[in-house]
Length: 465
Image 1 (cartoon, helix red, strand yellow):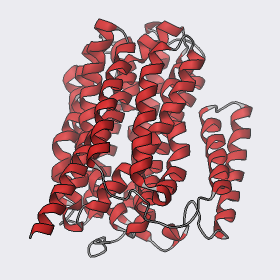
Image 2 (tube, one colour):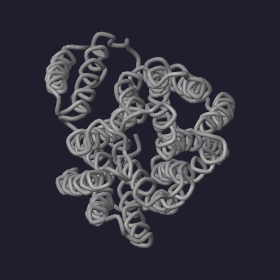
Image 3 (cartoon, one colour):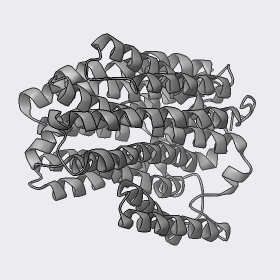
């Protein structure tokens, strides 16, 4: 009885730290998205370059998630987690002081690496200390914290931007980061020495990183010839990575996790598709509200709160239900609901009412909450304890690469339809065309995502590792 009480106390303390850490990164991301028009004005950026303020962070996070997940299993998850919080927090202090857009982008890349350290370890630490029959609930609470950050980010970020300038968002992030670092050092005691003995596959990590960088930057640079060349180089490097990993005793990614574990493979594919379909919503709708509807950042933020607010309320419930109901049923239905909401957004025009937009965002928020917690629970419950760091890194990589793919689609549409010019009401017709095509495409890719989610099979009785 006493041991169980001590375990529950440990679970609660780690859950608090993981939840706060999970709150900060999406809070900062959604706050920055609402401030992008002001950042663009400050540095005189065109539409494509402005997109790189978000994309540079995402690419850096995606590239380092998997290697850092493996490093956390070997070196200790607590060490990597706290180092990530430190890096992320320091960049919040440095970015507002940047005097050029290029320095700002470099600092965003470094911040993305810090974010990768947090993403690749927080879920692994939480899963390691939480009993299997309470895991879905814990994951649901953490996911709710993510959506809480997404909910408050546009609102608080909009108010700060209006009153104190975009730099104030990062100064707030610095204060929050310091607080969570102190809490993490005090509360997390698990996995300090690592759980997966072996060595780090540095060459494999380098091949993987170079391949993913080339692929993602190449995609973001389409339709230029340089983009096609970079994409080809990225595909070749990732193919070389697969061949290299087959012969390694301690691989960065054990490919058997995909070949022999259908739940793991299909759940991660579904996650990639879902995040690809949904990440650009806040970016596109933020520009729509500010440039086409003439709203201020704080007014736009209040409307954008709708989707993550619904997700915040429903995620603990869906996470708890995923301990009892098959994740493939819940996640697949969530993907279908998301597809319908995206299709509805594709029919927005310059005169669409606020109520209609709020209904679309609430509908998508419901679909997202049905999908995310059950899908993450399925991933983490399908692997052994020694692979929690890698599994957390993989599912986070699917999320970040999906988000980057989503922004890449927007970059391509902006390049083809709007061109290298600032988004203003004068190019409103071209912007609305790009917005509609984007949402139609994102709705369409959810359809194979539904089948990928259904194909994972049953997860029950696989947990408890």
